Image (cartoon, rainbow, N blue to C red; front, top):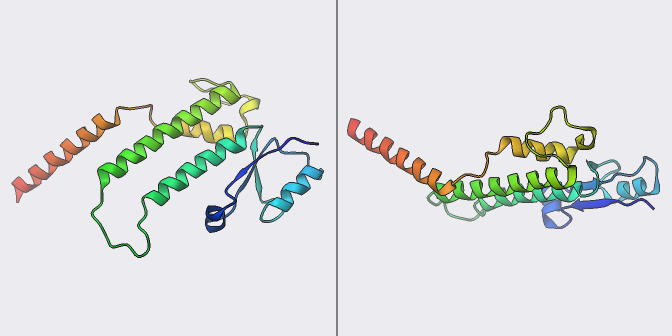
Length: 169
């Protein structure tokens, strides 16, 4: 029997946002395991081969974090408008960026055996969806920062700008 790793949002978020079945260590085409995946997916072939074992869980964690971040910034449909708490939202986004970068770097190091600087082209063992997702995250997101300090600097810049604009009117 083939060993498969399955991950996905099966409960209400999956129904609401589109079910996604992620598969690590995909089986050979036309095998019994392949037919099982087709039966579990919304339609035959509607599943993502994300890479070797552990890749499906990594991808699912990234997608779940991003979905949670999107949901936490939305107002309920019947809510009244409120003042935008941009400092809090920005801090939460920076925290999420740090966590995603750490998760991706850990996946690349622990599961793929890559450390920065990441080679280009990637070795054959890293030519799959999860490794490309992880590499994109670590190359796109900044290294861990002192986010509180950056937020204070941004706030000071905005205050200076507001004071300058008030002086010109």
